[in-house]
Amino acid sequence: MKPDEVRSLSRHWLRIIVLIEARAAPRLRTVEGLWRRSTTKRPGKMTDFIRTEGLLSDQEIDGIIAAAPSSLVRFQEVAARVSLAERPELGTWLEQFHRGIL
Image (cartoon, rainbow, N blue to C red):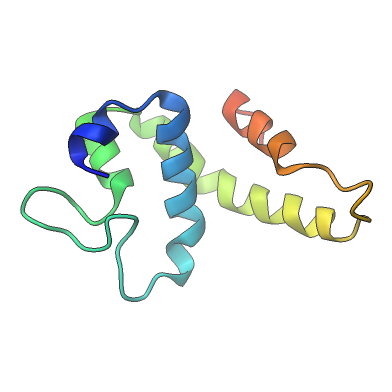
């Protein structure tokens, strides 16, 4: 995805990008983020680009980074203990995420 394509994304997808990079961050060793490594035209993390461009507020980005990864892990841990037939769908958690309820 190119910078202009990121600029054209809705808030919904920008939040998903920040979530993905925040969730992956503890395990990244050889790449910075979804764009892998920084270049002269863009950072390695799409989150940094989103922040610099003002596509989401600093407060919103920081809130996602601080709360969403651990909230998602808790959801997954609880869901893993429930039978498949009764397991909540990930969409349930994502709806809460987009409403700001974590």
